[in-house]
Image (cartoon, rainbow, N blue to C red; front, side):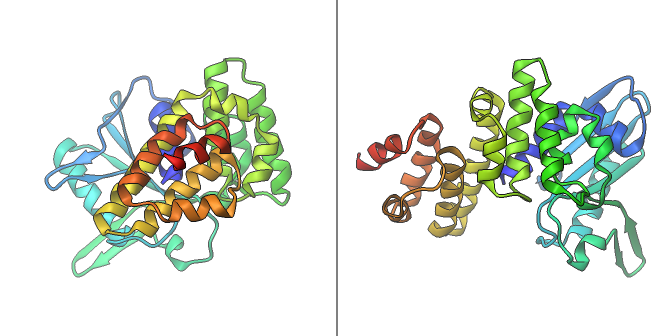
Length: 282
């Protein structure tokens, strides 16, 4: 969830950079579209529109290749809805974030009786990191790119982020690196390289994480799975406070869905594990 929200933030905040990277174009005017597609509302991860050429770039970020309904069908469904609404050329790109050998990440089409639809697939772990390192908006994605020395690549990304002079931008990108690098590296290692103080100054980061928590909790509530909500909150607490004492973990595991929702909001104000312990006592 946090990964999807981070990628959506990057695509919507820096659409020109994504167009240049994926399409090799320099758009003169660009607009981010709403991601809800009617008739029956569905959400695409990121939709952007180049007004000057009236072309849509639809980005779909995937951490895991499995989905329900299957991704190829979803891409066809998105294309039909976009074409009905905008009636213009549509370029669809699925970006797989986490390295896997699953055959699903090599599928780039939907086929059925009398129906064929294709789209482009980008497996980040196969991508040359240089174009990503050269563009600060894409630095968080560079942590997942091809490398024989992944730790060295992570260090390069962190060094590039540290060189950014604009404090808000540096904080937001550092926070994005922190989340996405967790797909490849141990979180403690990432935190040792990044300045946690810089990330904590990022209001955008806190907002992204909170949206991810709330979305996951709502899904857990809908499915009636308290265990799923616990995992989500534990993930956010670990990102914020580090590994938790087993006693605290046991207390959190016993919370109801309602209390977990309250904790998901309160944790954004926690600075130490003591703050969590005090909250659990009330």
